[in-house]
Image (cartoon, rainbow, N blue to C red; front, side, top):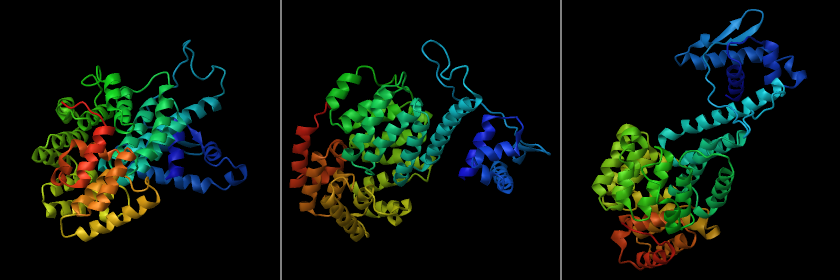
Length: 432
């Protein structure tokens, strides 16, 4: 709870020091009038924080009571971040700065890390509905510490993920992402792989893949650090026509980070037209973590592409998303349901998306996937409108559809033909 977080922050900033009850109360409740009545509240907060520690290896004794004095936090604490020195080598805070000023700086740094690690707590399930919450936490992290370059890199990555999953449209995301990139460029140093995030942004949100390749292609690749930047560059390669290069790039990560690497590999196999291999890779990811919502949705789309309607329906039901409020990621759900026993539900979702798009083109997200769903439901007129709009609004899903076989069953339809013609003019790639 927030009060426990504040109390923990105070403890870890001054480990193995006796902190009096009055000192803790004055920091937790700055209002002097209210502070006089907060001793029971402090005791309760300490008790509840101990109960949290009781669930881990440190145990409740990590917070020691000092009779008649206060409390001491007995766990070893490692400082993960120090304010960067100025160019002349002096510390960021002047030597004459008061202890209160220095503690405030440390408070900001530690609060930044708390937001950052909380964002990572949401990551294991790969749930599209949690992406906005992760984005907010990372925004708080970099607001607390504008020099935290890793937090800023991951914030940009989550903006891109929301576009990939259809949670937000490219048009609505781009201003926030561009602002974040501009602020990152102004920092004295960036997190490793910062250019890979910029390359994906330029390729798949600004639709300038050739410029991105010219700026970054000569040196990005195997030299990238493992993790988010390599995923970003791999997606750039996949959706600009070079899935084999992406597979080579991701080969090492399949051993280092199974949970994320396998999904990117699945996308690469899908782009190569090897749907069986794509399904095997996505299933491998689910074996590593059965709770992955995003992987179940992608597998449902692959099942629908292969005509396995019952499998696609079952995966969508297992994901639990059918019980959630409407969101752009519902486009993947609707496509997975289009051919099965829940096709009526797919029609309802498409109708809801069309109603939103008629009011605001940036309201539904994943316009390209909605167009694909309309094709799968034999609603050609709506498919033409949605696919045309996906090109006009530079939808992230549009290059995905161009690079993968999802449109192949409908390639002779006017909607698919018009879409490919428009994309050939707007999104120029360099295939393998």
